[in-house]
Length: 291
Image (cartoon, rainbow, N blue to C red; front, top):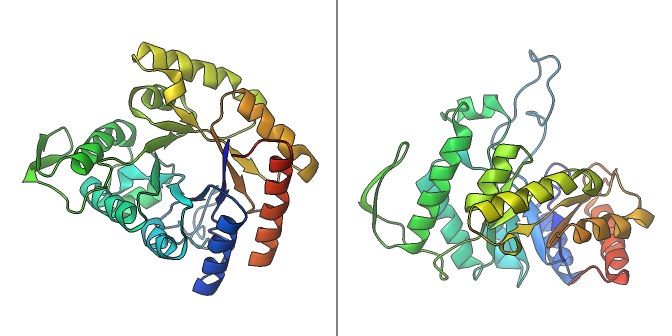
């Protein structure tokens, strides 16, 4: 498996020196990619009793700006969103931003997308929460067309482009698009249009979803082996001695990638996050699970 590290969005702070030290160390430790979560606005909980999830108190670096910075200070590590909340953003602008990061990083961007859960955030960004799933499929089609073709004309349900295009475009003419989520509709969407799937949860509870994804992929006329699978290893929930076994169970299910998340483990400094990453990559490498 290719092993990556989750950028500790809510715990790393705003010092660019700390961000540089974390990113360059992750690359030097042998991690294959850096994955960043995405939120633009957080909801205040002052008048929202029972609110679950990120809030206005949780810091989030904007992913495309962050990746522009990381592209300049790293050499080969892949940059992945996991996930960008695509339907709350303008599609043509995402195509432009993603292409720019891909160009400046030398083709190192992988775009993980999802439909999100925060209706407050959608409202503040002026986008519809209700139709976000179906709209995301049209968005992915438009992204790929803008990345691959100099000038396009498209008249869709939500998007209208009249003889226009972005420049620069990705050097390869494409950027991999992976989809996050575990609902059945998401699995069907991955099977139809995804380059990969970003599941959540334990491997023992994911077997049925993996089998359904493979079945839906065959029905869509595609090969299951052409769709990557990247689960997450949350260190706060999995002790060091169990991490290799956790990763091996996911590998047995067909995982091609794994991303290690150090947030929520009580690390107050960048040094603490990096020490946890160092111990984890050593454990996975020792079990023959990396590379």
